Image 1 (cartoon, rainbow, N blue to C red):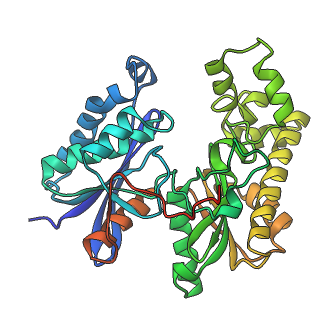
Image 2: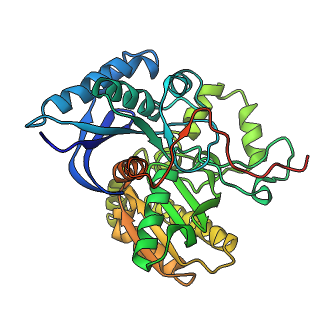
Length: 369
């Protein structure tokens, strides 16, 4: 009989990334990693993300059925999706969590299918299902929540899964427990999150949807008065404006592409506009890293650059030149989400962590009003 493995499921807009990992105590070893691509025209036929569930489940099951020798599952770990605020860690998937992810998420996004897919596959396999470090992980202290408007408190919405995974990697390299690590982590992808980790907790961040530097497809933080005027200008409906800021903003709004490889080629070809947009994005990322270094009193153990854009040597060199004076810069290019999902499930199976059960209340200090 094959050894039981941990299956990871990470749904994207037109992809479902799947991983198989062998558990070695509380650690994991990758066996197979594959991304299933879904035709955009096919996905457009579904009237909601929830309606995609049977289609995606069939694709995942088809992948498992095609593995030579068959697969025995010890656990399934799905991407957490856009849940309400939760503490960091592992959450067991049950019907209540599936219902919330499908029908009452904070925002509608393909990642909300992670928990339902994990539950379906796990039920068929007779094993537990988990989600790990959703984007809604919220560990902000009260001082980080206060904005200049009592009606709009600051909150955390961050690439917690990859940020915490890379923090664990750096802690391992430094020979210290993750719970003792102070670091700035910049997740640089289609969206950008820059976070301050203190003693293993994400105590502040730029909020991946609103206050971050602009990214390949997102507008990031904008001047509020001008944004208010734009909202009431009559030029855009509500949903249209949201798309313009989140999905069609950032680099795409200026240059018509979200592919930073093409942008760098445009820069090399002498495109003055492309150079300015690229430099402005790097400038904003550097400012954000500096602000998170300030949260850590400018004494972080290190600065981490991760995500898809960290595969660009041009970008990582430019950022290191700009912010390397704060602390040593370490690059963990690409996404480490599959490994992080599997590692979270492995910690629970090995007894090193206890999975929480839905609904989960964030472990934060109450505000004094």
